[in-house]
Structure formats: structure tokens, C-alpha cells
Amino acid sequence: MRKPVRIGVLGCASFAWRRMLPAMCDVAETEVVAVASRHPAKAERFAARFECEAVLGYQRLLERPDIDAVYVPLPPGMHAEWIGKALEAGKHVLAEKPLTTTASETARLVGLARRKHLLLRENYLFLHHGRHDVVRDLLQSEEIGELREFTAVFGIPPLSDTDIRYRTELGGGALLDIGVYPARAARLFLLGPLTVAGASSHEAHESGVDLSGSVLLQSEGGAVAHLGYGFVHHYRSAYELWGSRGRIVIDRAFTPPAEWQAVIRIERKGVVDELSLPAEDQVRKAVTAFARDIRAEAGVDEPAVAGDSGESMIQQAALVEAIGQACRCGST
Image (cartoon, helix red, strand yellow):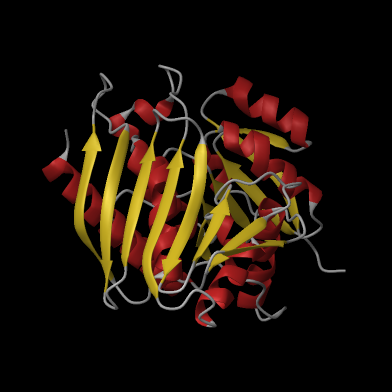
């Protein structure tokens, strides 16, 4: 049996506590060795639950020789610094989305990872759920004809006033937190580069961060994408593809529970088919793929179901940056 990839965690985010670290402790491919925080009590709380070591300070964790890779659930505004330091320390990196807050920083880190021969991955978990591959197959086989429009939405209820996603200096705001999901989904289904035809955001929080937004994208092939996102909504996470002969609808598109049985709804000429798929744990699949691809980089294993390439991460960052610029021009 292969030795597990030894993981160090930079930061004590709630998402790491709820989803990522339980998966890392549960799969055979990874072992959580240590969790670092600037606050001893936080690190010790995580260490007690996940049976690992507590480390005071991120740099001290990066200096440990018993860690192969780091998971970075820090706020987006801290990503560029600490992902860069992790790569310089010779660690593979799995970072929460967005990888950074600018396209230039993303390109810099991708280049650094390449020079260091290290794996760098942006943690879009939904890409590891098999139903999206099924949807792509349906689209490529022209089950709904030619794609005309793609619509994706992701909204959540208002956050606590003390939530770090309201802090501008940490890369807060709805676009960088959840708007990136519909944008990544659009890139999954619309071929070629996407351009921002229009965008607007609503900035009402006292901190100045964006609370919601709407985006119109144009593809080279003529199809368009309508995206909506925000912190001031009833929960919704869905997308649909509207073609010349039908449409495909997906619910709970980005954050399905592990036990969720996905249903793909296909509408054609007044006939509705529902394709039910087995439940999948996209978190476990993402963690397993990260570990296996580290071993593939070292020539030990064949690549697993890979996440985004470096070039894809750069394209995603450029698109999100363009959306942000368009929102600032059209914000209300």
C-alpha cells in the first residue's frame, strides 16, 4: 500500500473543519500531520479533533520536513503570500478558491510551481463530481442540439456581521467567494475564451464589499452565459443549458451533500427525462485526486482525475478579474 501524502494545514477555517479535514482523515491517500494558526487555541482545537499536531505560525509549519503538501483555506487576500511561501518551501499546494485575487498573482504562482516541479491545485470541488461529465457528454452528443445559452446561479443567505468575507483587505465579497463558481461552470461548458459583455454588482454592506452580482458572458461560438450570485439570497445552487432542441437542468450544482442522489433533467419536445445517478462525495474524490496526482508528478502513479491545469487556473483568474472590473463600472 502506498504511503499517504502527509498534509499540513495553513489556517483554521470553518470549511476546513466541516468538510476538508474530515475527508483528509478518512481517505487512505492522505494523512493530516499538523494544523497551523496564529492563535494557539484554534490550532489546538483542530489538532484535538483531527489527531494531529498544533503549530503556532504558518512559517513554522512550512519548515517541517515531515510534510509533503499543504492545504490552504486562508482568506483569498492571504493566498498569494502563503501559497508562494509553501511552494518555495518545496510543498505541493491545494488552495481554496480563488487561488489569488488577481490574474497576475495566479500566473506568478503557476510559473513558480512549474519551476519547482510541484503540484498546485485550486479547490473547485464540484469539478470532481461525475454528473458534470455526464452533462458534457450529453451536450457533445447534441442531445439538446446546439448550445444557445448557459445560466448558472449560486446564492446564500446573509452572513454574520463579523464574517471575514465582509473584509475587503482579505479579499472579501460575493464575487470572489461564490461568484467564481458560476464563472468556472460557464468555462466548463462554453468552448473557447469567454468575454464579459456586461456585469453589475450591488455594494450595500458597510465594509464596501460586493453583496451580489449579475454577469453576461459571450463565447466565441456565439453562445452566451447568464450568471447570478450573492450573499443576500435564499439558498440556490443550479445551472441549465438551453439548446436548439431542448435543455438540461441541474440542481444543487456546486455544493451537494455526499449522500445527495444527483438528477439530470433533460427536456426535449415536450418530453421530460430524469437521469438519476449514484450519490458521490466530491470532497473525498477531490482529496484523493490531489494525493494521487502528487504521486503521478513523482512518477509513482498514473494521474488520477485531474483538476485544473495551470493554464486553466490562469484563464479562470483572468475571467474573474474581468468580471470584477466590469462590475465596478456597472455597480449600483
